[in-house]
Image 1 (cartoon, rainbow, N blue to C red):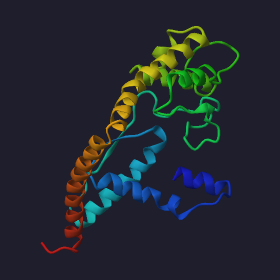
Image 2: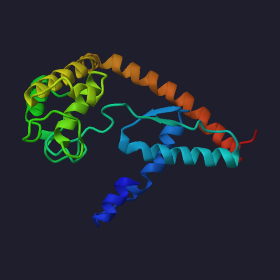
Image 3: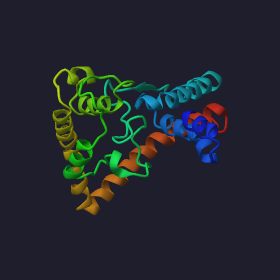
Length: 222
């Protein structure tokens, strides 16, 4: 997988967890009879290996797992770091200047996006190779407004306007999520009830799938 190959190529320490992660992720997907999996572009290979596992198991032991398909959004499938647009935005980045969290304040979002790296020519167009910083902002704005980067680009001639509108769109997109978080945070009993309900539903589905797999293998009597 990409992360494993990248680290091994740089002679970095590779844990057993990183090596076995794709199998664990496949189990998380298959256990709940998932048919569609929304992923970023860099996660496509994880769905492919999950499909391989499901198809091989079904071929050998009979119809057991739903074979999932990946769903990649037309925009925002891979959001890059605001300060280093050649790298994917990641919570593990040492500097928080290039990342936006789900619970980020509107003021912080605006500040980070207005300081996002662009370039010096001032031409607003979607070109990941030549204009990674600008293209990243266009992707973010397109994803937040259900548009496409190319269509969004046609509406702008200045980076300042693009950054302002991108910040506003991200703030608007995250607002209902943040409001729901604060609502649940203020009511621990309701949060616990919902967690228990979700756990019960998940256990019901996963138990049926696991039982079906064990029975088809021959670990359970029919």
